[in-house]
Length: 88
Figure 1 (cartoon, rainbow, N blue to C red):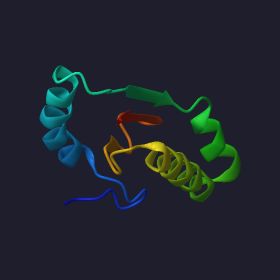
Figure 2: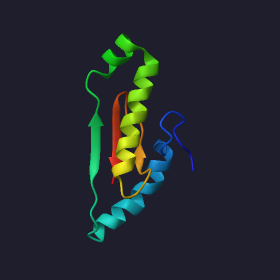
Figure 3: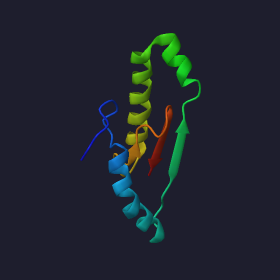
């Protein structure tokens, strides 16, 4: 299993492998949620406080989503720039 080196959750490739089984669960009428989270003003965080603080923010958001997910690690830590996609 490949993990994102920063957030320690599954990377995009691993997520893509999981999507089929997750969608099958939805067809079987099991609950499925898609969360696309956009971190507003993320560039300002990096510009004002530095990339180390920005990395901390990404780690915290990923850890929070992972902690509420019934299927641990079923997320893309970074969809595009400051966006995080999670299937739970």
